[in-house]
Image 1 (tube, rainbow over the protein chains, first blue to last red):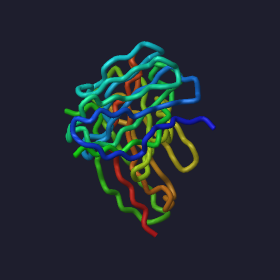
Image 2: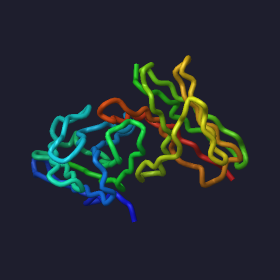
Image 3: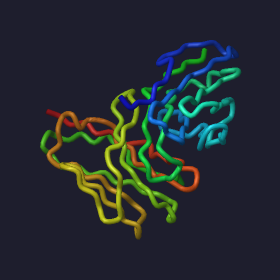
Image 4: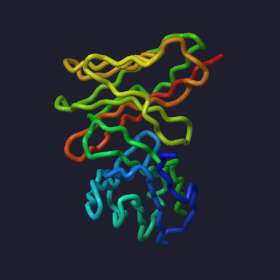
Length: 114
Length: 110
């Protein structure tokens, strides 16, 4: 089954404790990205990757890191989480970097930083 | 001004009703538009793309009006299962960045 898989689905952590949210897709997609969703603000792009070893900042990259060492994986790293990073996070992938291709989303990771 | 703006709703409609949502966008050069559906606390899923010539899929019709820079979604014969948040999305450019509206909440009542 074609899918984007994120883990964990739910996470409560403390301020400053490094964490990684994994994202993996099995569709051989080139393009992957991370979004956060907050009430009243919608989904905002954090980072994106157009291919292996090619990553770039989205609209809200502060406090986050990513890597793309393999085509299928695109982990999101929070080196020192803070409470304002409490949010619902989605990983997405699409076939290419062209803007008219469908984006497939993971099931989301609900992160709470206390 | 937000890049993509939607009325947040909620739109409360009875089963069988016809409901329409509009969404405005600010970038006149944008080429790609979509409607995504998001159920409560779940991931967004593509509902339909929006073409200049209009796009119909069963009970759903999407239209693009470039002159006025808005897109619309029409749902006919609403079902209880249509209850969700509908996200207007502008896509594209060299980085394939998707710009999301904040969504319109639809609640279909029995």
